[in-house]
Image (cartoon, rainbow, N blue to C red; front, top):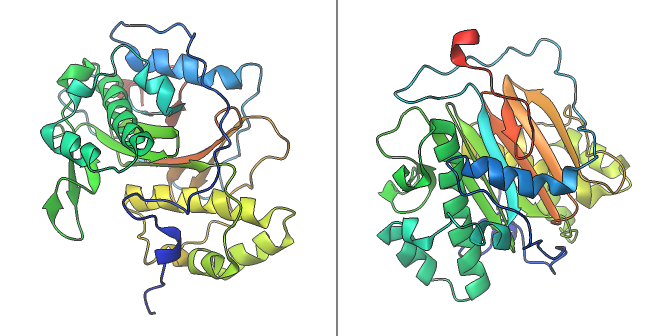
Length: 314
């Protein structure tokens, strides 16, 4: 089939949907932050304050879905789970360990190309946050994490899919939008995407370029068809990053069997499965963020207290 034209939903210089007014609540700069080796746990605990008192909404796995295979043991203390977090740009940059000096020369040059300082800071925060997640996954300091990127389409380094050179025991993903960043790291394939909750002005022609016919029918029956689209958009972008599909073929991936976004105005987390992949959906109303994480292993979101399952126990 001909390649669908998704250019209307791709921003120049950054991946995502068209710009929309901010709907973010002010960041809490007075939060206590830890400077120990468990930096990601500190960010997770602070970033999940909006989840306080909110029960997690977990979807039941689809029947017949095969379980994900545990990753092989690497050279470091890898846990059989991926770590993910969604934070505001300000929350990350106010962390004492989030130093721009951790960025590579390539990353600093890319950051300097942004015309607006706010966009530059979003880029910087996402590239620092993914280091913290990778460090937590490997049990090392963030200073020991070097980040690189490679584009499969143009076969060039410096942009595209992020990875940690020399470490096959961790895979990483990052995403950023206006004022909000997300990152994930784990011992197996992982993808994360984040957008703003306030974006609700997507043309019907764009919906047809991204959603399957069944997803369009589900969207049409919803009271909030734009909200349904946004949830499927971040899911499919995460699937692109995990390598399950591409932007040219995302219309062929049907996610109508996954649970819809929970009703109500509170922050929520829900889990489901798609073709053996773990899917975690987050709606963070305090940060105005909508995010999805897809991984071949279970995902621990910031603030959750359940410890990862060690590989030896599987």
